[in-house]
Image (cartoon, rainbow, N blue to C red; front, side, top):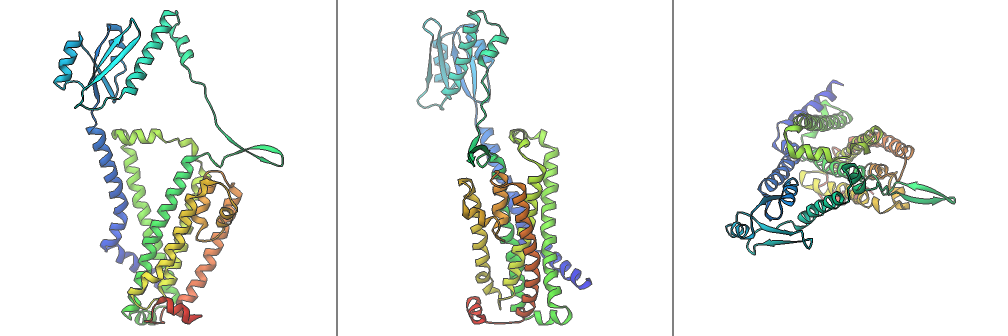
Length: 405
């Protein structure tokens, strides 16, 4: 146990001191910061449309009450003064309202900014409705009832054994999106950490340092130590993200854009079982791919062969991610099979479970299959690592596999 802990600590310390690991951690944060900066700059430079209004006082007052971040109304006594303001680019357009024939006209400059005519038309429609309601003697309560939009709940049904049942396969879009994001994150993590462990083993074999290491430590101990070290790095990265997310959450009220984004999320679509199952698949998927990367790394003879050994792993993960993107097309026999195949199902099953194609029982069965496979595959990989870690073949990884057969 002491030697295993020593190897794990060595893996952790080595990566914590490396620039590449910190770039792996900071790259997603820098990407989010860059996207947020562009969004903030776009919102800050997007000025409101200033519209000059030439209309009766009642209309002008009602329009000013509807000023928002898209259109701002400013009253002018007559059309001549409004035209002067448009010529001097003090306003972006002129709105002329004629109550006699119930018509309006929006004038914009050829060289000026575009004005959101749909927003103006919506505002005029609201004012017209209020004026008509007032002429009919309707009070505010009656007006609200008149303008109330009936709730419409759309559901998809399926027929089974002659009975109609609600089919949720096309609902819970937010869950599906989150599950696909987690699948993409899993792909990025396995690509990063799988590459690290495979490259580390390939470097040790290429420098012939493995012979010296294995004189003091058993091959299996070294194998498990590297896995524990990589798992520790993953946990550290997730904890760092969690701390940053918690800090941002605490100050969300001071960040308008973030506060609006949080309020727009329908949190009621999430439940504890979905989040726990998704997290379990994420952990099992990362660990399984890391073990596979360590196994493939033990087959190479030098760092130059790591790319050859790691390519099939990336293709396997990519196949799972592509399948996850196709889940929303419907539940098919192929998707059902892929939901229980190790390496593929940790990416596919959370998406299917998130949109209701499968229930909790099916998700737990798939989780159990993956957990059992991961344990058996770990034991197998440890024995294979022991046999292959001191085997060298400069002919290349694919010829090595051919020779093995």
